[in-house]
Amino acid sequence: MRKVPRQQRSRAMVDAIVEAATRILGRRGWAAFTTNEVAQAAGVSVGSLYQYFPNKLALAEAIRQRHLQAVLAALSNAGDWSGSETLDLRVIRLIDGVVAAHSVDHALHRVLLDEVPLVSRENQDEFESEYQRRYRSVVAGGSASRDASQDEVAGRVLAAAVEGVVHTAARQGDLGSVALKNELCRLVRGYLRDRGTCRASDCERSRP
Image (cartoon, rainbow, N blue to C red; front, side, top):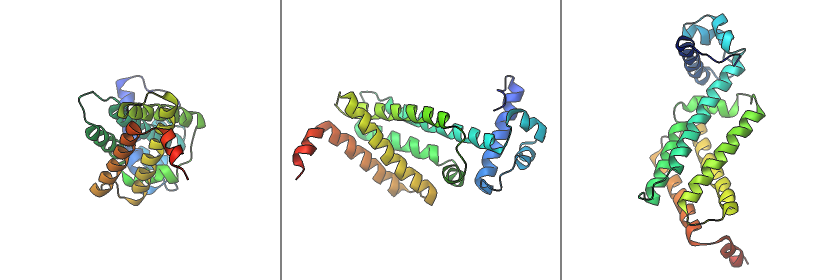
């Protein structure tokens, strides 16, 4: 963004611009996405839009960042486990949150994944670092392991598994499938339970 809105009125205008951009980007796709149409849909002048967003890529990045923050919030809720919860409930909370964060607009999510260029590698790296940290928290809360290095690897494996299933389902429009959510819950639950009952060395000994 060119500048950060400070007053309530300007924050409301920026929110209206981003919300309009979100609707249009999902409907039109990246190639047909224009700042003129966004400004008209938001009820503001193009000049007002350009005060905050220099081009359509900056608008798309604002949409992407909101989506990424929703994903982090879902992971934060899943990693904040109380001792009274069963593993099943913890996993259901994780999957429900991640799926919900990707279900706001299936078409928009496909555009963000496949069409919109990445603005900043630094922003993406910051997100990835926090994303992996929160998955490590999920792993640490779901097993009896106290090995930080193993939890780090397990967090990456779990993140890749969940992300792969959810992103594929988003591209195919299948995120609303109850059967898919059940299978994903079964996958995560089985992985976390297995980590609590066996060690990595057990796998090595079982290799032929």
